[in-house]
Length: 295
Image 1 (cartoon, helix red, strand yellow):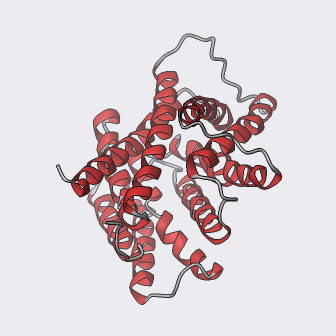
Image 2 (cartoon, rainbow, N blue to C red; image 1 turned 60 degrees about the vertical axis):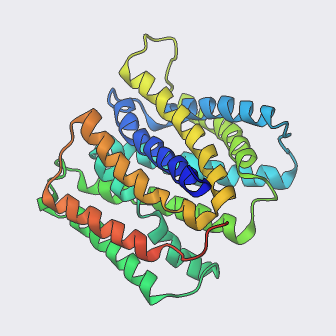
């Protein structure tokens, strides 16, 4: 298997893992656990795994003012806020629908990149943005058969990809203080733990790990471990093949997310949802930047 094929295999595994985290999150919220309690333990597991990776790489964790500022930005914009939104949304929406919504990240990122001067205008990519918006609009139609009262949560779910798009553009515009991605995520996870702990306690969303473990607890652990592993693998792919090649993971995350939801949760979708998915995929294809992958 040549190098390009090997990279594609890794990318498929990353997409499959990230897609699996959506139905696992759906299971985790099934007993009424609050988002802040779930996020705290998700971050604790992430700190343990990423800390171990950083230890093996013999990399110190910078604690100067600039590094701490970036840890805080990523902790809030990349974890606490969007993950809270996602946990709230997925408790009221089918897991597959949330997977489709996540595909809106590149479509939100394009107009933000234009506003910040990170990108140039393109009619083709504007068409991708419009295609994605049509896909979201189709999901909101009654024929999409969303659960009763789910429409406000569909609107809320769009804020998560918006936050990821803002975060990505901020990092692209101003860098990340010279921090490599794994170190940055580790530092942000540590800061996130320190922020999430008092929030979970004072909001009454604390999750006691001493209770008997069932499906939701194991699902949370699985989703947390998967996220840390696939994120590190994704960063490795970006370093080996470039961001343009790695951006194809968006299709895989959405596609696998739907397949996993059907297999694990027994979800099924009407024709309108599949049309919306096709519109989102068309939007992804058009809106992603064109470029050469690294040799």
